[in-house]
Image: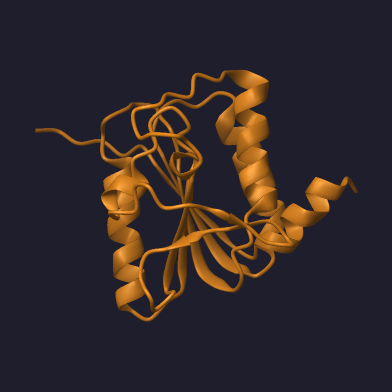
Amino acid sequence: MAESDEREQNNLSRVDHVILVLSGKGGVGKSTVTRQIALGLVEEGKKVGILDIDLCGPSIPHMFSLTGRDVHQGTDGWIPVYVDDTQSLCVMSIGFLLNNKDEAVVWRGPKKNAMIKQFLSDVVWGQLDYLIIDTPPGRIPIDPLLVHDVDKGCNDSIIIDGIETDP
């Protein structure tokens, strides 16, 4: 087993459930749904992490007023940013790694997938009841990669697909 695969399994092994929020269309509220699910679970006393893998338009840091916060590197990997002092909700996003909030990441294919894989393997979530993954719009090739990697690393996964809003 490759080192990053082993690290990924270790980092996800303490996550009880993964919720993957996705849709083929942009602007339908995936990030809003992610936020609301997370807040609802925290309100019920659950420990929750959010992984924002919308590399071209990360909105989760802004939605939680975390813009400008820094991610720290620990001995075992990246430490996610906690929303408040209770440490019930933590977030990891490419948005924390950019120099400014208007900076764009225009990666395609292998480079984008490598960054997503690095988030899955290198973020030290600790013990979580739920990890919610907020995805970018579109399907190929992200969904097969994510479903495979998440399923092999965590205890249980839920996929929320086809979010659609109609004004």
